[in-house]
Length: 376
Image 1: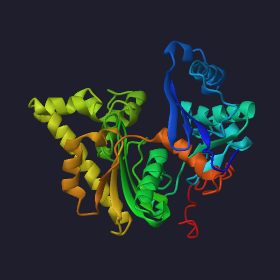
Image 2 (image 1 turned 135 degrees about the vertical axis):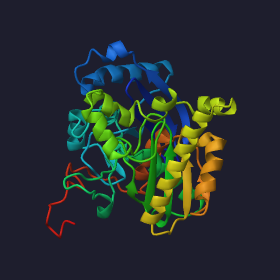
Image 3 (image 1 turned 90 degrees about the horizontal axis):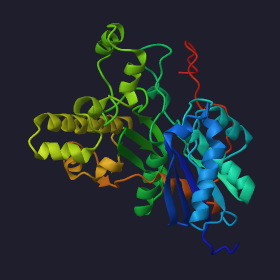
Image 4 (image 1 turned 135 degrees about the horizontal axis):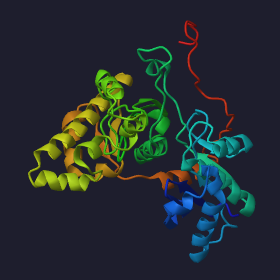
């Protein structure tokens, strides 16, 4: 391959009922498709990894229909997931990473199919197989992990892929490196993660999977603990119902019956005062968490960046700026860039701008030894 020829990357991002695929040549997206999967078809498979042949063949069929060949693809970049806690970066899919993804070592989620698909395609067609900033990235500083109960610790569960890509993009636009900046990045979509980025490391954030942080369209966020305890022991709610409030049936779904910011704004314009209160409360909570990230960065903040789909909404942006513009310049990079991030991570490695990381399966953090001052 000529040194001047841009690398071709196939990005693969499996979700609960669909698989996003995109073919890139350098930064140019040549093809993109969100392949839908019938729920009844997926129910046939006892384990998520059992879906691999079905998803693979469905993807290949879509690519074939589009006239796309894979034998000239330089790398396959999968979403990743189900891995031991790891540093951020691009990981070549080795046998241990593949096995952990196949097992769902830490979590059972369709995203674990990303690494498996990337490896299968690389073995069949040549090229490298990577995962880029998987959901398992955990770069928290130790003081961010401690809570008021022994054995209950805070871990990193955030929009790592999009958060890192936004940080890298912003830095490049400033002619600087992501590793040289302190940023507060607010990913505002169906879930909300507000993260302190310190010189290329995500040192603290809210946990989008455990009921922490701002209210979001589908998530309850942080709630007074005693009230939750009362609900749990009232006999009126099952464990499944309580769990669902953290990631599925909380937030706007619970208050307003919708996850759509456009619908909420339509209600507000129409005079719905409760919809306005809930939306304003969401904005207020995001602002408070941004302020806490500024404290984590000791007030040294180069920029606050708003990203995610809801950052397209002018009402949210204007009202958030009113709260947080004193922290640092507020920049809007609306939308999600997960597919672009997968391709970009692979390209940085292929160009030699980054070294591919080796997945060892050893967690970067695995709890504290209570009473051991060397561990705390």
